[in-house]
Length: 230
Ligand code: ADE
Image (tube, rainbow, N blue to C red):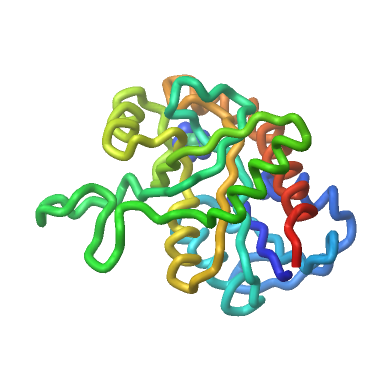
């Protein structure tokens, strides 16, 4: 199978590239795509740069130019659910764009006509994640992930996102990748390891834990690649 592995930041794909060791590179649209073979699969790996626009563009390129048949997102997130601690893994069952707002026209937050507030991830990939976690004795959570073009470091905004979307974690790319994959009917999976709690310390925590949490997520994604059958 041809699988796209997408991160937002260089740090989020570095552990994956280190594990793979050998790859070719193709530059396209100001991004570098790393092409590799791993565990009977062809991989297309890239980091998009931060935010929904860059992530949408990179996901679209993976599908339209490179022909990937599934996309796995690997990266870090802020915790919204108080049960999630730094280093914990969570995958999204569904995602919403918390900064999408045409409520002036009577629509709910996160909704635009012909879209939906939530985009759902692929059930089979989520099941594989649960199986991989069970086999390796790791804990993984599942929940709602909220996406927006804002780094959240504010208890009030965090509370609003939790209450409005029942979100468990917050990041800046997942829902946009989901919208792209849903449009092209490509199964997708979004994994995040917690780097901060989206509160007043979020900036410092993010800087301290980015590498470590990105590695936790990246290694898990590669275990999933091994578990995915053709
Ligand atoms: N990614 C990691 N932490 C985040 C936060 N607090 N807000 C948005 N995206 C994040």
